[in-house]
Length: 113
Length: 116
Image (cartoon, rainbow over all chains, first blue to last red; front, side, top):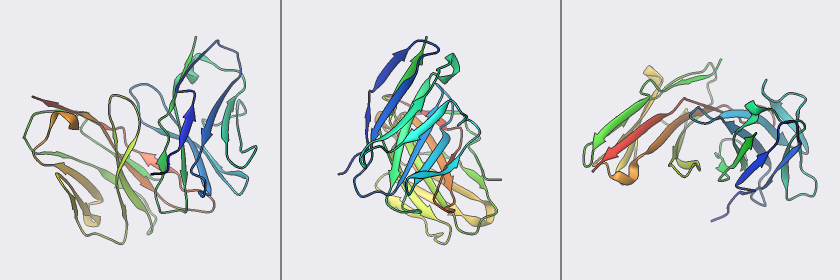
């Protein structure tokens, strides 16, 4: 069964450093998403990406965040200057069409120290 | 505004008991989708079911069943004869496609512990 692949599974970074989280969505999917889950809390929407541009973003997704699909296969989330409160599990997801539901990746646990 | 409420924060049962996880949603959209996801201790999100707003038929899949009632805006999930492997956090979620996006709004989750 096709999978969404996220790397790395765990990343530790120092406060103020830039970090890039990588995702390889399912190859024929068109809609891509990033979600965040702070430990013990609910899963929160960050951003959706369709047709090579951001289609929707949440209040959490401020200027420190950016997304890119550089080569037609990878989908990245960049955090420019990490803060302690960015520590969370970050999930990438993709879908083939709206209403079909998502396939989530297994997540990247980001720890900012 | 769209909202999902899972009032049960934690539930603890003994193996073989039946357990129902409640989910109540709010939306003004007429077209929407409801989901349940399982998050085991390993952390990944495992898709369980998707239901669209026009299909109120209940669904059964093995020991799992779902009861969708638009009249009460509820989409409850029942596990029959629970097993230790069912221990996880379960999230109910709501989506409403618009434009180039279909974001999911999650509830806070219900942590289910099944004791042997």
